[in-house]
Amino acid sequence: MPAGVETTFALRLSARPFPPSLLPRASCAARTHTHTYTSYTPFCATQVVQQMQQAGLRPNTAAFTSLIDACGKSLDLERAFGVMQYMTQIGVPPNTATYTSLIDACGRAQQLEQAFLVFEHMHQLGVSPNTATFTTLINACAKCANLERALAVLQMMYASNVKPDNITYTALINACGRTQQVDRAFELLAQMRQHSLQANTVTYNAVIDMCCKAGDFNRALATMYQMWSVGVKPDVITFNMLLQACCKADLEEQLYALLASMRELHVVPNAVTMHVLASKQSANNPRLEQALAAIRDAS
Image (tube, rainbow, N blue to C red):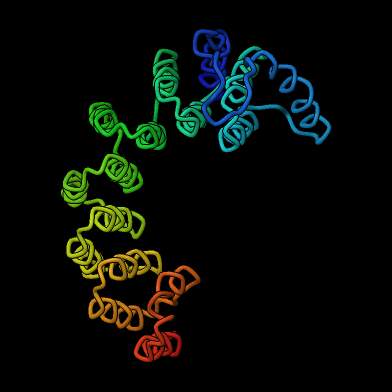
């Protein structure tokens, strides 16, 4: 945007301090002790900002966004909110990426209501959410096993003319997995095709994992062949899930067929593969040894 518009936008944001009503008052579930956000404001003001200045860095929006992201990844939600409040106090305007990082921090701490409050606050300030913002909010719903709310966010995306991508749909499918909604996951997979979105290996693996956990090996196997047929290569994670399902159900012929597919696709077995097959190996199974040797030779 033009420099003048950007300055006006920044002033409008900085004039609206981060409201205390959004700040968490209770400790996150992941924390073992309780602090209020106010105990972290001095940390942000002195240590972090001083370190930035000593390094010749100006405390700008990108720097504070990175700090909020780091707090979220360490499950320190209260400190993440403290950083957000401090940056607004000193006139550094949060942007879409900043709010997205704070929503992610809420999701990681399984504070879903807080995530939606942050989303609502950014909307009130006129900060437009993008695909990453909506996807992060869906991820927060998935972490809290709230599929219906995740689907509502998807509808909100379409209503806002923000296009979901394959990462968005993968997050929704993960939400299906958390709630054991296998049929809904396949509906979402079909919806991706309708919107010309290509599911990737991670997306298909989420569906296969769900099928395996539900004891539906045939559907899991069919999904693997479907991904293969559309040019998405199954990886070692794909095969490990299917091999484990075979071992649990004692499906020996299907197991060897999968090992043959691994060889054909040049998928190298890893430590997890060997652990999954340990029960078969302990039985002094020469057929299994030959199959594994063939995979290693082909790789």
